[in-house]
Length: 322
Ligand SMILES: NC(=O)c1ccc[n+]([C@@H]2O[C@H](COP(=O)([O-])OP(=O)(O)OC[C@H]3O[C@@H](n4cnc5c(N)ncnc54)[C@H](OP(=O)(O)O)[C@@H]3O)[C@@H](O)[C@H]2O)c1
Image (cartoon, rainbow, N blue to C red; front, top):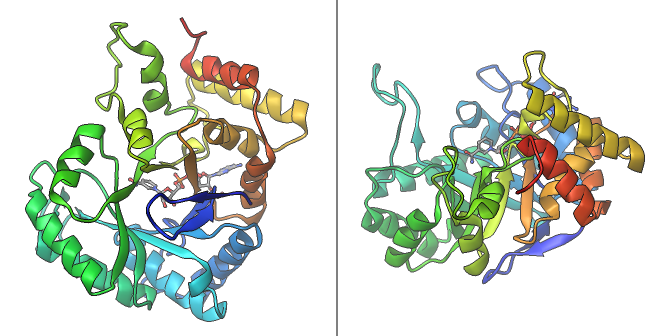
């Protein structure tokens, strides 16, 4: 699989990443079946050349990281061949007190505590990358700076980034940090294309203009790698839900038609649409099935023409570009 170099780091990793959100299973404590299933999908990902594994402290209430820690025991030598990324900052309902609401927290104590718990669950001494999961309106950048300094100097986190942040939020944060923010993970897919579409709507009044204007251009200008979460719109692009809107149906039809024409799986076409964008998007795919992961990885061999890219874009927007 082709790779991306992560600017100002020693990391070179696969163009597609694997998202570990679902691998924790539904049973507490983690069971053998979950570990076996996760070992199979992680081994398949590695066979396909995937070297980035995306986590968060909250995935399956921490079980996804615990299962991944067990998977690493099953595949000797894997730790030094892969990049482990995790996230912190979302606190779930009832944590720690019954009745506490779901909220965000980027205090120094919460960030450090969360990373230390992730390291224990993953059974590793370091995260390669830590992302702040979602912007916290109450965040104090100085607290984040303290946490990042401590984690970096203790060797517990090598590099830092954010998720779901817009350009202004990144700029504000970066002003207070000694560590460079190297990644922004955002929801982007053919069906959730606002961050790409806003670029062609400059100076066109529109009710659905996203509140993240300029974010992709900002990331490109600052050499911040853009990752796409839910790059297949949670599967909706390949398995159209019964209650799907006409726009979703039309988009999935266009994906299927191109896939048939090229003799490729639809997953490969939908992901190739992201890979074709010059910002250099790294889709984080989340299927738990090996055959579907193969279908996703076929995207690496696809180079969409400008005409096909715009054909898909028009279907996704529900009409041609102005
Ligand atoms: N930063 C954030 O805020 C954030 C938020 C959400 C997710 N993420 C990250 O992004 C990763 C990917 O997210 P995602 O799982 O939503 O991505 P996705 O790749 O768009 O969707 C994967 C889902 O689609 C289903 N699917 C895929 N192909 C299918 C097919 N051909 N037919 C039917 N179902 C199909 C999968 O089910 P099967 O498993 O059955 O194939 C799985 O439930 C997560 O693992 C996580 O690491 C980050």
